[in-house]
Structure formats: C-alpha cells, structure tokens
Image (cartoon, rainbow, N blue to C red):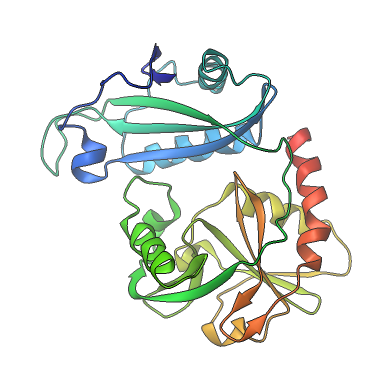
Length: 281
C-alpha cells in the first residue's frame, strides 16, 4: 500500500503526474525509517530532522504534521500492507505541490509514505566482503544543503553506477577540498588505534540519524577518543577499520580499500549498543 496525503492506495495506482516538483526539480525531502513490531526506531530524531529540513527549504509545514500524526500514518501504512508482524522500512517523502518553475507557485506540500519488508528485526553485521573506492568524477558541496536528505541525489546515483560498473560495493564521496565526506548510502567512520573519527557536517556529509546516535554512544565509552574532523584520502589506508552507518542497515564494515584490508572489531563492539539504543529510543 501507498499513503498519499493520508489516503491509502494500492501500489499500482497512479497518483502523481509529470508536474510533480520532486521529479521536475528535486524539490523534495525524504526520511527512510526502520519499524519493528510497531516500534519506529529513532522516530523523534527523524521527525525533528524532517521539520528542520522543511524550514530550511522554506516549505510550509501543515498544522496536522505532528509527531503523533506522522507516526500513526506510518504505522497505518505498514498495517495495511500486512507488515505489522515483520520488520519493515518506511519511506516518507515530502515535496512542494505542483506549480511554478524554479520559483514555486506555492510552498504547501504533499507527502507519500511507502513501505517494504526487512529480513531482521535487529541490526546485524554482514560477514561478506565490502570493497570501496574513491569517486572522483564529481564532488559534494561543503554546505548545509548537503546535510539534508533531499530528493536531489544524482551524485549518489552516478557514484553507485560507477561502483557497480567497476566491481565495488560502494564509493567514498569527496568534497571540492578533496576531503572524504561519506559514502553513497551513509556516513563514514574511521578507526585508528583508540581514536574513532567521522567528518563534520561542515564538510558536507549527511546529518545522519545513526551517525548522531553512534556519536552519543561513543562519547559515553571509556578508552576511546572521538573526533569529528575532516578525513583526507591519505588516512584511509592507514586506518585499522572503516565502516558505514545508515538507518536501515545500522553499521556496515568496509573490508577493503585498494590494497588495504580492514578488521571489524569496533563494529562488533558497537552493533549491540546500537540495537539497545534503538529499542530504548
């Protein structure tokens, strides 16, 4: 089922047209959300990120767009799709109503909720190989718009195609200063000895939900130094571990970059703590 502005529709029903501004101009936002047995993981963080992003893009927030209303809408869509007893993911898209050219005719919004099933109710670590490479054809902008989860993700798309064409599982994205910012599908963490590092938002990385949660977990642990600082490409091959974070997968250990292979001990130490935080959050 698909939820369009509160109406539950069958997946095969046409409800958008060619004037949709997310299609025409990438004028939209989205949140990808993990839901298990009626529990929306990190829902408060997702909600406030969406509200903040809508304000930055000068979208008009409907009066009924409360945390309770959207959570209920997500759960209703999951129930109508027969996924209540399964782990699921929901995608909430928000875009300006049709009209105008680059300058919109209005700032009111439409929204769509789509859902699908997941395999595991918990975050798990894959034991499979996961090789990455730098993507150097195009660069991220180091600004606030890059922190937002907009529907304009063509750089991520092209980098993903590059990865597939060249036999990689993912690509590392750079900004114009040649700093390593993130991957095509999540935030990047680098481990060297007792130091764990992730790029700052000012470098242009996504303001990721699991990134934020892991930083909070790491700050509470003894024996680890946490750094939010720029990462140069030269640091990658000197690292002990690299891993990716996102809402759906949790933590994805990178096993190889060029000639360097990496362990996953830190990922193994953190995955249980992330699951515990997700259940409590």
